[in-house]
Image (tube, rainbow, N blue to C red; front, top):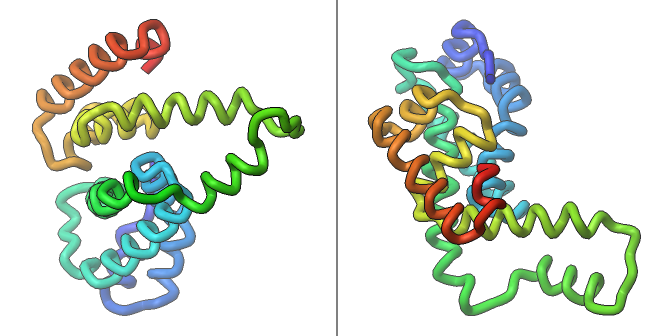
Length: 187
């Protein structure tokens, strides 16, 4: 979990760019990982990461230390990623992403490449499974099962009740099991 000193956060909130750069260096990979798991696209995750740190820079003065900085940052990252995902989902039905078209051409049927196809297939399966879930359930599964947050941390990150987290996770597991059988049990 991210551990950034309160002093660094305060200095950054007061305009110290070195302190803000320290926050960025320490947490940008974390934010990118969260964004990628929500959007399923590296370019979108990079866009979300940039947007998140612009928002953090503008709103750092409002951080009141009532929760962990990581929880606050997580919430901004999740909301930004979900908003971009919603926006892009409207466009998805109309076009094929360039990366997907290139990958389909490069690794099409009959072509043998030295890549780890099983790993790619597993990643696609997990992404497909996650995309089959409603947003709230997907966010809970990602935070709890992929990012490894505790139930209480998931609740704080999403701004929801602890029992809502448990309920969403239970419904997500039931849905995944019904859709994917044994593979869904692993989540």
